Amino acid sequence: MSDRSGTILVHMVHFPVLTLGPGRRVGVWLRGCSIHCEGCLSEELWSFDPACARGVDDVAREVYGFFGRDVSPSSVTISGGEPFDQWEATRALLERFASSGIRDVLVYTGYDIADLLCRHGEIASLAAAVVDAPFKLGEDTEAVWKGSENQTLSVFKPEFENVYDEWARSAKGALQVAVSGNRVVSIGIPRQSDAAAIRALVAPES
Ligand code: SF4
Image (cartoon, rainbow, N blue to C red):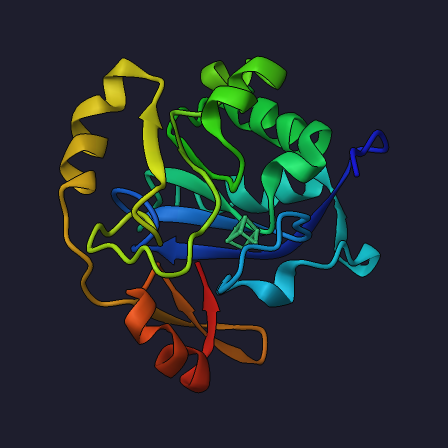
């Protein structure tokens, strides 16, 4: 599932994202996940659909385009799909962000952070923070930043520790509703007890 051609499978790029990380962010949802957690809210993103392939440079340019506007983002969140199932492409995108001065990138993954640091240790210098571990149905949580209690937040860049600490102490609140293409989507991570009702109303993007 790695990519050597400079392309990356992307489901959606959206700004503003207000519910997946501190501040006002650009959200990048990747396409394809091999982990298949029971109860995943993003099951429609599991397939590695080649029709979602885009140039890494093209995606980076779209993200840059949001910076410097009147209401500009502070940072980027990469969610899934599973970023580490197409790690070469994800790393290339993170390197583009780093070289253009975007320092606050939050990455969501279903893999264990200790394992990732062994296999892809460069993540600790490319991301400001990572939320890790598979979603566990039945382990509900009130924390705004995760979907199940087993998941953890690792902050790698000391300059962002305070802002992530403050965000991590927030309880779940309102989800964000946005229009993407011809779909209405919810952005954010709901309580497990609310997920079915939300799914019935809109397509969730956690
Ligand atoms: S919760 Fe995340 S890691 Fe788990 S199946 Fe869904 S997209 Fe994959």
